[in-house]
Image (cartoon, rainbow, N blue to C red; front, side, top):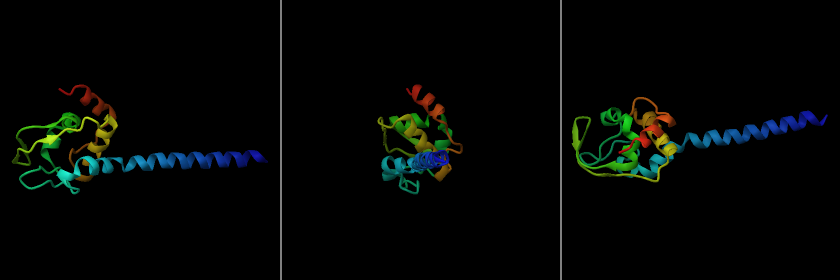
Length: 133
């Protein structure tokens, strides 16, 4: 009976292919953060005291959750207050980040640093980017 062998083989190949797709995407936020953010905000998200603001439990990230994708993509100029402390170091933007990249980074910030406090959807990020000034 060749039919069960073909079905089992096909099922195995599909399971292997889908497993690879899902596991690679799981680390993407961490990889993107390491590539684009960690050099200033550090791997642990604590930033540089008095110079680069922390991302860990950041009230600024939470208050600006609705424009976070724009802030990451376009950068920040001027003084900001994070967790009660003033920071005035410019943050360069990263125009090359896709909406999917921004979604992965923001959700990594949520998962690792509890900031923002809720995950964002791809649709929310797409809407933010569409409305960036």
